[in-house]
Image (cartoon, rainbow, N blue to C red):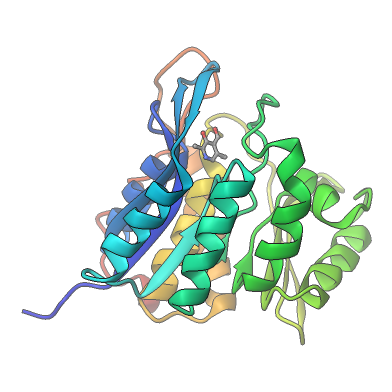
Length: 268
Ligand code: PXL
């Protein structure tokens, strides 16, 4: 029997199961990739609100990454919510030790505005995580924080993508700019700028960011190149939003399972 492809997520837990490492693991499974997880923080959360956040000791985050990589291994890695300086430092240490090329989702706040990266940790995040990213996946708000720009047009998104690439991210996807009645993603690999447009979708949006970067991570493990992984992951997230999970009284989760019956993703 051939061994499965493996992806590791280093992220926070969302007890509601829509975002965070739960979204990542469901998405890895949907792509037929074996998922492992190093937990950074635990959130008590549902579709309505975040009731509490408990961070794990940084050395224990490190220990989980060590446990996974020293035995199971990983064909691709993503980082999500890192929350504080000590956790950022611990993750950076393991990235360097294992020469990882992670998908970096610079998680900062929930859609409602609850902080998932402490204010006093943003500078360290900028200086340590951007240049370690194989693919950096900020949304508009995160892009503004990471570049000090105000993003008001597609042209601003393009400039920001170039800046973040210049700061060391190998590939940059700026997600979900809503301009000219469309949702626009910008992908930049240092050579080509691609504009990926889609219709503005309403409805089940909890977990979109995590699910998108997890799908990219799974596809990288399967051997896709960065551009293909990004474009296909966008389609996956659109379908996951359209299908959605009708649970909870707040922002309802995307359906991570939406493509799980399809086996040959790279043949699409
Ligand atoms: O979508 C960002 C995100 C990341 N990680 C965790 C989260 C959320 C949003 O709710 O809870 C743990």
